[in-house]
Every structure is written in structure tokens, then in C-alpha cells.
Image (cartoon, rainbow, N blue to C red):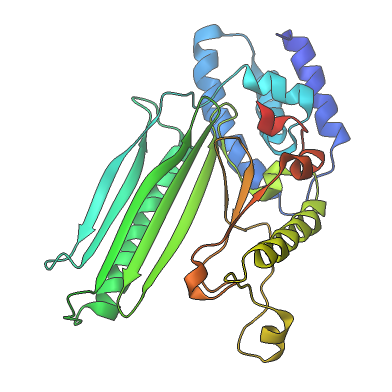
Length: 298
């Protein structure tokens, strides 16, 4: 455990050594707000820092959650913001009178704590589920077919001492079945919702992960001819728009081995029968690209 002076020195060095990545301003402001509230609550009890020092520590902790230098991370991990005792419960359920539309909405609970990030996720879950329900009523409200259904549900994909991964799915069944999946990955120790730009030290991850996905796609098709991914011929014919395989907003989650898993929507890179294609990225690929090489090993 570092002393207060050493902590400040470490964070200051981390700040000076790192260049501010593109689009990180919003992340900093969000983390500053979260850290400010959490640290102030802690300092009411311990009375260890004052005035300018408090503001400096808050700002540097917000930056450390973005840059994750090794030493800055060790300091942040001494101050867990969320902790391992959190639960996923049914927060709301949207159902029509015929029960053709049934959307279950998750809610994350932390006992008496009120973390702004968790509150934001809960609000997002409610608003997106409500929008899905209203859209389903608008599109299918008059459909009388027995096989028609819109079902929304959720589950925990991972819940260990370090990470929480929440999967939400929305399945629409009419002439065929179509499922959309969304994931949120939370770093419990650092109190942050992960995104690809937060995980990696620079934009080189985009090309590196794209090459890995292309490699796995080709290997899958070679081993199993029944699998098919859109080809350049499909794009040239103009019926399919060529997607960007990896972007900063690409959906992903961490599996039980803390490997990065990239997720694609139906029809995005393959015909509908391929479902939601997923690609597990080996740690040998991600480790050199991470802001801290051992971040996913903890």
C-alpha cells in the first residue's frame, strides 16, 4: 500500500506520461463525477485530505481509470468503488394484454449505496425496454397469429470478484425468429463500465482485432462449410453493405476466463441462420494492446 504522497506522485506521473486519447473528454467528466462522490463519502470518515489535494486526487483517479498505468491501477484497486456484493433483479416488466409482448427489465442493486454509474445503467435499461415495448406494440399490435411473440429477458454472463457482465436479449418471432443481444461489462474494483477505448492504450486495437476476427471467420468456414460470412462478392453486388468489423462501439463482453468476446448482430456479417456471431479473442492478441498488459489477468 502506497503512502498518500507516493499515491499523488504516481498519479501525477501517470497523468504527465499519457496523451489524452481522442473522445476521452466525456469519459473523464463521467469518471470525475463518480470519483468525486465516492471519495468525498470516504473522506468524511477518514479526514485524510483537504482542499486542493482532494480535487487533484479526484481528477487523477478519473484519469487513471482511463489510462490504467500499472501503478495508478494498484492505487485504484485499493479503493474499490462498487465491490463484489451487487445483485441483478427484475426491475420492471412490460406486458401487453394478450401477453404476446413480454419484456423483463433488469435492475442492478447495491443495498443502500447509490452509485451514479449503476443508476445510469438502470435508467438506460428502463428507457430502452420501454422503447422496445412501444415499438413492438406499434408494429405488431394488430397481429393475431399465435406464433407471434416479442420476448425480452436478461442474465448474468459473468459475476466474479472483479467483473460483472449483463446480457440483455430481445427476441421477435413472426415468420422467423430474430434475437438482438446487448452487453454491459462492469469493472467492480475500479467502478467503471468498460468500453473498448478504455481497455486499450491506443487505436491500434481496431486493426489488430479486425485481423483476428477475419482470421477466425476464414478458419470457421474452412472447417465447417455450412458456415457462411458475407464476402466481397456480396458487397460488390450491392445487396449487402460492408460493415466495420471493429469500432470503438462494437458490442463485447468478458467470458469466465476474462477473454474479450466480440459480438455481432444477426445479418450484420452473415445470413440470419448464423444468429449472433461471436469471436473469442485470445489473450495473446489483447495483452500487448491493453493499457495495462495484465489487466484482464486479475
